[in-house]
Length: 226
Image 1 (cartoon, rainbow, N blue to C red):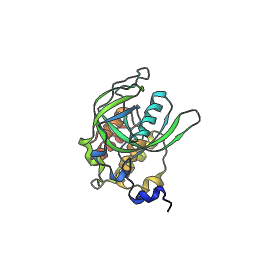
Image 2 (cartoon, rainbow, N blue to C red):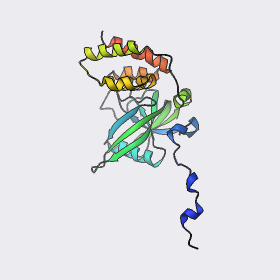
Image 3 (tube, helix red, strand yellow):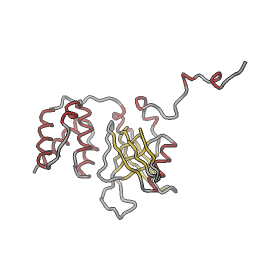
Image 4 (cartoon, one colour):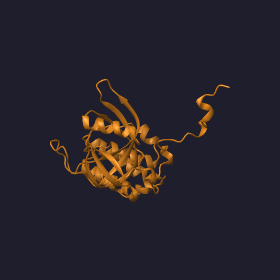
């Protein structure tokens, strides 16, 4: 009798190296993660963020993340200073899971991150590969890992204010796509897409709950028309 490898393996129950997104818990999150500091690039839990990765240190970060848990810590610098290679970082960032990537012939990458949960940065340092690694604590944001229904959103008020903001800034959007989003997704997509300042984006990121975020979003849209 000829035996194949399949004879010894239960193919229906092969453990995953990385848990499925719907099964992630706090216990699955690493205590340390590579940091990708980008001013103005905010990632919220449940949101998707496309990135072009070309700096050698961040190419190295991406390669290392792909070899491990496919998680990267997106976080904003406190000050916009392109000449500072190691800017001081904000305390709150978001873990992003690499859900797709394309390697280009020149060695650069295009990737898409899916927001998993926010985290608090406890300390950080430089690795030998050139990228920064942070010790993180995601426990204050455990609710990001479960489905949360926001309180009934005054959707008409929000969209009315959004239209006024876009008109004032001579911007356009696809309203058919916005109409298809439920309230929770609307509170994920709008903060990421509206061209707020890095400081304003950080305020949206740090809002404790979806209801808090809705309030901050309404305030920022109103201030953007002053």
